[in-house]
Length: 315
Image (cartoon, rainbow, N blue to C red; front, side, top):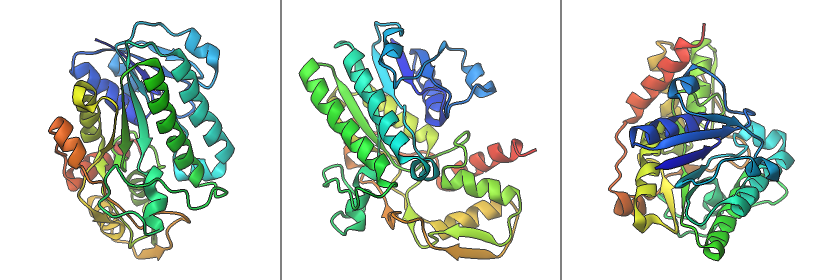
């Protein structure tokens, strides 16, 4: 089975490619390396890597055809990136999808990477329960706020995939990722960012949104869920939450990272970034029913692996 991973040199992309190879797929990666990296971990995969800017329609025209599966992970994400250049978020995250949907062949099964941010505005507005199922309304609190451009782009992407797939007749699965973390994630995610600051011995140690809560999902669990969804015919045409449903308070996460770092600084609690949701926990009933998935990596073990990866590269 031939799989094409678009955005495959990024964090989730490399881990997903490894999981696909384990599942017997033949994989090719496409990436523009604006966020993905040409490093030893990518090289060890030993798969073809095609450099391409997928916001350009002619980039797709130069790609091979005949894929059984296509995974679209291309996106600008991370709060700093989104707030810093919201126009780029909208441009990249819509054009890459639009160009793919023009190009994809009816025989290919598409996985589109979406996000829990699509419904975060509803949680903040008190309209959405936590844990949260896939059926809740998607709400934008403030269309002028830079932070919401990411959620808006993913809402648009979900709608574009659903309606184009129905019109063209190709199968798809949409997975909404929830706080996926692990080695190679950079410092846009809270666990990687905390790990780097703990390694550097920041004191006082700043903790933004210490009273907020998240359900963190180790990347190996997330990629296992994606492959299971793509293998399940019952998942075709579905929007499915991907993550863990074990809730953790951010202050407790900071204490875990600091314990692994053998570091006891003073803690400085700071307000959460504007627009950050107070709680985020997915209801995984649908994912479990479709695939039999269960998260396998407990938070402490996942954070230990992640911290060790960052420490090994801190020299």
